[in-house]
Length: 468
Image 1 (spheres, rainbow, N blue to C red):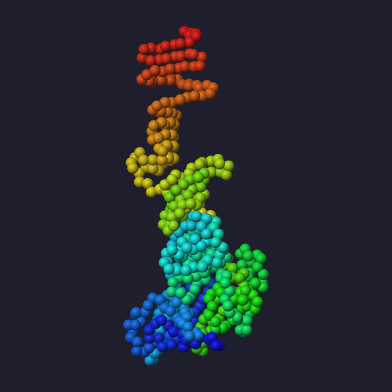
Image 2 (cartoon, rainbow, N blue to C red; image 1 turned 180 degrees about the vertical axis):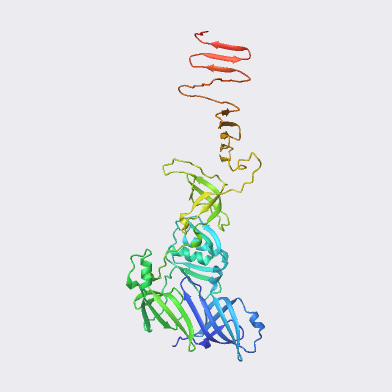
């Protein structure tokens, strides 16, 4: 009892507080630390003092002639009551990690060589002064990680579940402080002589065993619950009865004027977190712009992405393709609009699909002006079009074309040159064959036969000429 903290040792950072009536501080892995209290206020305090309540609150205590912090945080609600001649204020507050759990954000970590600490550092850039300790091996993440419509706190919890770890917030700092992963340093306390309650969590063991943790043992899910007056942090490593255990839950409350801390101590295996995903991701698609293309994969920059990286190679869902390379090879070009599609909640299964382009027809000749016309075109001006009259194959917007008419007519147009070069024979068969030219018509073979028709007449040159 020598180190016990009484209600007289605890004081709030609010003016006019006479003493605490009730106090409860709850600390759980992966959740914000929450403090609830009732305090007796000075009856002479003006009501306007309540309107001027600060946004943050601090709960301090004296121990061994030293002032220490028990809780610092952000006030989420406050109520002022009048009971007879007393004024009672009720306050609920959370630690500073609360600020990470307000705005939903979207960002994509496409660089799979980024490490765990680099991902955390990217998240924390938006919070100014803060501190985070990463207790997870700092290896490359190795896969696509996508934060979609999640708060930073939600995202980091989900991201750390990839490593079967969670977040451990700290309650004694004005700014954001947390540990990513369970602590690795031992607290110098001796709790072996305290009364305890011994428990076994069979349901947690069964759940983890059915979700991939097949090597767990029942003995690893024995945990202890005990009360004392020492103040240690959530996630602290404690040597208890010869074993290394970890603080998995804390409840601090005033009991008969004394601050009593109830701790749960678990083995590391019982602290494992199964991997979970963002259910909001299933079935959504994000607009993006193609940056690079390689075979059947593309690199893109997503719209509304806070990072705007473009180094991940997404599979592209083409019109029709097979594993042997047969079928269509139809890939988007640089600068083209596409969509990144997420078929499941697992972002690593994402792939890129084509995007419905917002196109306003420029006129009657616009290829998209008639819904009955199907066409394939490129930026170079090449076109294959299936229209009401037949099929049109066109190179460079009309410079050369082949038109196959439904009427049976074939029109071949080449402004510079048309070559017919079969290796064996070429046959032209029709009732009438018309050859029109403004210059000469020549028929030449390798044996030296030459037939030339022009404005001056028809010239025949051969070893033998037969006239009928």
